[in-house]
Length: 381
Image 1: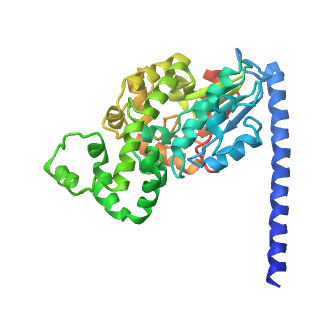
Image 2: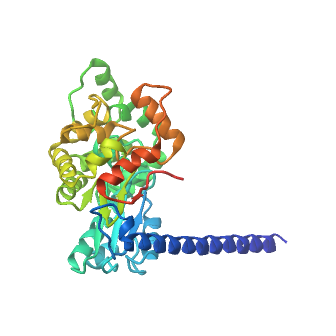
Image 3: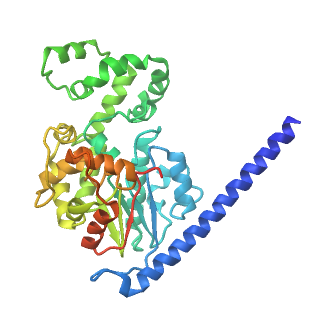
């Protein structure tokens, strides 16, 4: 009977889930034991490297999925089991239950799902909660390529319902209903190409763009919601200001090292990796971002300028590499995967026959940082 078949399939599925869960716990325990052995055996640490006995939890790309975020953070024991999407703001000061654990989120908090703004607010509150408890617990939030895209006004991956949630309480519900009813094709073809000019009220640089501006329905829920995202991520907006401040004081960053483990969103490669693993260098880039508006960052992101070499670059040049170099940027590189890496390498150098070992170029950055392990998100594999 269909009901029996459904039960059997459900039981089979749950058995598979339990097996995967059991296998994952075995893998994680072996990894932790292996890592601890590496930390304890001083001879395998690079000269000058530091061992640590701190528990570290690292979670990669959350991409606006608040439900999954809460389930993961409860599972790893840094958020209380009874915290929900509805009640977390009421207990923001006591969100952290991770004790002395360090939690590193390796970037890409936003885009693709519906709760970008809530996840940002939640992770900032979790970070502040850990800091207030004075028990050496720590939350470090790293910058991914999707944070850089939003900072530069590229909202291609911002889901429309997520954009609505940037609006105030009175407009949020009508917007969530409105973007479903509206013809999104009109927004995509008439508004999105000139979105920054609309939202920031920039002067149209040409008659053609002015014509596009005139064709866009600026009062549509799509346009109103996405303009609210642009303003929030600009230099003095609620998100843009918060990211800039947290980059300056170290609560956010481009990489983070705990003992012999080096955390970054996409990877640290070669000379660029060595440059960004230097704390003073990273602070220099943070200061440049702090002084930069969204349109300033857009000029970097859109590749209007190009830095050919990472050797001896200054923070302004490093920002250009961070924003616009798919090969070298710690937020963009695909050094995690062979075929994309070689494709990036050929595109960057203009040499179709060039092949370079991923391992050797990552090893350069690890040795410079006196680290053994590189922990990343970014890649789906």
